[in-house]
Length: 141
Image: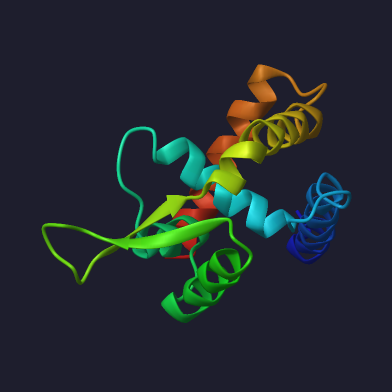
């Protein structure tokens, strides 16, 4: 196997997927990364409080990058930080009414993206793909 050619294909696919995902939000006022963050909070906040640290882990980025993303979403009225009553040092992320109004649209667009990206791929191939992703993830630790 020519690993160099394989990595070139992987890099090309990675860039294409990013552009493809971004295309699902070009006609909205939010970017694809903002949609991804809001969707994560929409889904996860149904069962627990979400904190900036959760976004760091989800996105695998540094705290300063998450702070910048949160500040931008906050400035645009999509979320706010609220102190916990039990410990004021911790700020949970809370969706605003503005986000709740577009929640279904965000969820629908991400669902359409996911359905389209995996269209025509067999269950077996998806399991192999998952196995490869998990091994590559392990190799990068």
